[in-house]
Length: 122
Image (cartoon, rainbow, N blue to C red; front, side, top):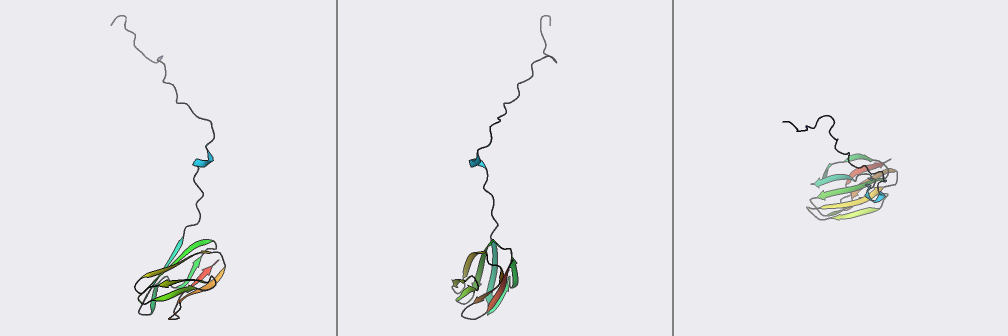
């Protein structure tokens, strides 16, 4: 073992990885997330609504989708926003909007006059 040099504590340390000090490009930053869409689901069978009925509260500025299924053809109507959608028998109709008007608004089926819920926006 004569003449052999063994590395020890004095051996050279591996070099540290380079660190970039350049600022991150704005194009790689994630876009700010907007409010999540609030889906309100109602089913009407035999003239009786079920699901999210009664008074349903949503925050001002929330994107909302009213999804209404019915066993008979009808039209769902959101008062105050004057939004409506046809509901084919046995299928689902939907109304999408941003809850940007504060207040309490009735959601009904036109032909039957059935109130499904009251939407409270505040």
